[in-house]
View 1: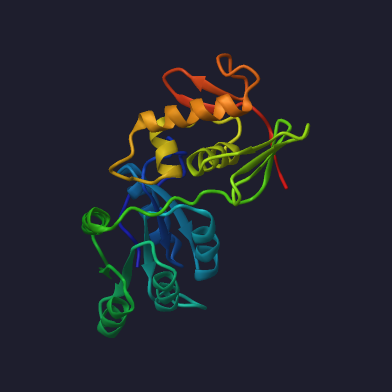
View 2 (view 1 turned 135 degrees about the horizontal axis):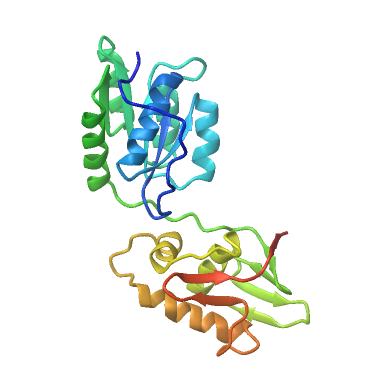
Length: 251
């Protein structure tokens, strides 16, 4: 089946990193690529996978809001992958099923899929179902890096919330300070705005607010900067956010 959407290879303008990311898993290139471009134009970031193996690698690395998953694929099928996804706690799944495969739709819903769309489908219908599932789905927990990292003479261990300098200084961080530093270290020399930092450190918690990021940055600076009033490690990008101005080496 071919998805009837205009498709070209022109590079799309990148979306903001705070936009929801959707994984499309389908072995049919003429479905997954036009669908990926269509969802991109609707304001979603997209990842594409041709089989369950590619999908598993992306799922382990990316912070996904939702997965559009074809049931009939060579090798591991979509129902098996759906079972694995539900067993590990998400993200939400919308199944793509053939019109005649009513049993697959029932089994998929029993496994825990959030919805299904029958092929051939109207992409606008799929878009409406994606938005409906996202509205009722709880926000995903942020994936904060857990590996030790060397940052400008400091070694940060996110699991113990400790920061040790090569000169012997040993500093205990709060959980919030440690999570923020881990996220900054995972994006060295990259400007992250306050909304993005909130997403990556605490998720879309209704109690969180952007000044919480400013306050945490201020506390971190007092602990690690030589002169907190003139920071050289965690620098402010006016109108943008914050940037870790250092190379990072993973231990």
